[in-house]
Image (cartoon, rainbow, N blue to C red; front, side, top):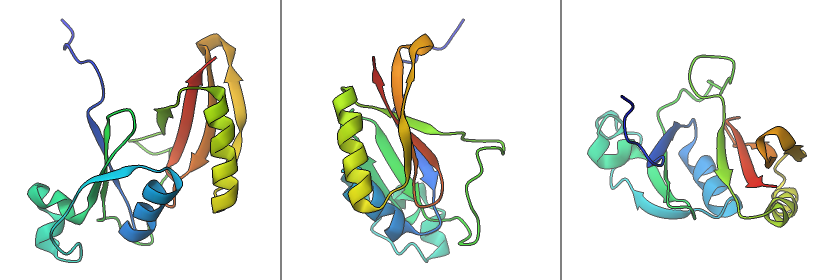
Length: 143
């Protein structure tokens, strides 16, 4: 018997620099802050406390999913999709035109990105890019 799940409720990403990542998700992707830690992220007790959001911030995506940032990674660490864990995270957008608009926004913000790739066998088009920690992200739309 499978569990009756419907959608992803939230995802929390571990980041090396909270302010840099916050600026990216808020200013470049346009996600709105839903909640933020009342504590100091430098305080080890705050960084270990889920009720203080681990010293981080939670965004509400336009699709309703929550995306949290947890500032506990070593500043010298980096994301690697070849290790156990997350490979990438993909957000759905409404249309191919939204992918084109995202390219313009990324170019303006200096965010490197790939080309729009149509994956006919899956009925989608994707646009890949990385966040400031190198976490691979995609925007996806139906074709």
